[in-house]
Image (cartoon, rainbow, N blue to C red; front, side, top):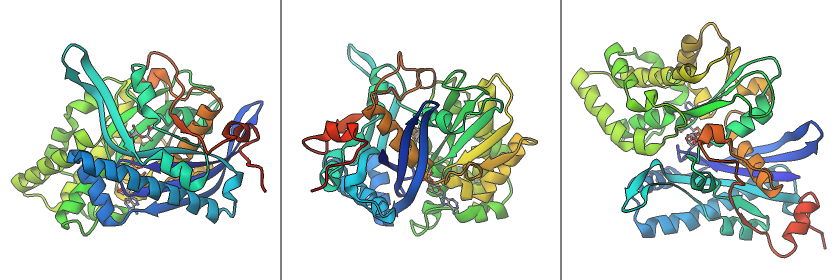
Length: 398
Ligand SMILES: Nc1ncnc2c1ncn2[C@@H]1O[C@H](COP(=O)(O)OP(=O)(O)OP(=O)(O)O)[C@@H](O)[C@H]1O
Ligand SMILES: CC(=O)N[C@H]1[C@@H]2OC[C@@H](O2)[C@@H](O)[C@@H]1O[C@H](C)C(=O)O
């Protein structure tokens, strides 16, 4: 079945769209990438999303949900066109949506205790209507309802794509937030350890945006950090952040490492009289060291570290990761034929497919859920949608 995966992560930089072909073999699912096409948001939309993620009004969130539905639909149609495929030959879309809030610890409510929640927007009804393709979205809430954190969800996909019978691998995603999946030698989900390690591009992007009054959105290729020096005292303070020593299952987001953290870092920069280069170097090192904390909760050996996510282009972070894990080889998922930036979009194509095939997608040992669950909500393409799914996703042509 041809399946589109759509993802806009915590960086809020645009919609990553991947078209994959999924086959069911005796040995398990086989996934082939057909096309990848990111649809970047204009800076003004990114800023609106990030602002709405902190203090969006109901009316702004309502509007953004519908507006992003249009962007996601366009991203899906764009990647289908890029692959020279007809939308009628695409069976399914798995859309992660745009995370605007994630409260894995919950908020205490009278009489019910802490209620956990997460919110991903980009209306799937709009995506299904514009594309004519059945759309699975809203993957996280079911895991939360079953007692989990709702994140990370990609570890199941990491196991499918990267697990090796003899080699122990650590998969690292350098997104806005960074997360790791430890895959000991073996198969399936046995022995998997995975969680969000905390800060990554979100902090660096936030500092750059603040420094340039929003004119620039990232430390491209880690150039500025590369010119700076790590401030040991500030690094020690950052490494004492309580999230880093929290025992998994754990997940985090903009609520912990977003605007408030940027304000605090900007204040510390002034007190310590640091250059922006030194501050970025220190935060890039912090990202790598936080990933290194993963070893605290990993019992077994690691043979190699494979990195994905937009942050692989940041040479400073990649250099620090190599230091932190030396002498282990630190490479990117490209060495296994996957595009770093596309991997999460691919993951949501696979997770959507699993739901359509009635396979549970969460790994309870990772998210803390009480049991495996079918993830997501389904918006059918129209009459005959189930027959189309059973037919490998192809719609009858007139
Ligand atoms: N050339 C580059 N140099 C430095 N950083 C880059 C470069 N290209 C992308 N990035 C970083 O990667 C980020 C986007 O990465 P990605 O799309 O993997 O994150 P995300 O999916 O939004 O986040 P998450 O995985 O937390 O949901 C950008 O915000 C930017 O900081
Ligand atoms: C709530 C949310 O959107 N979390 C994201 C974010 O980005 C990275 C990390 O934090 C991870 O937990 C998750 O995304 C990936 C795709 C996941 O669920 O595995």
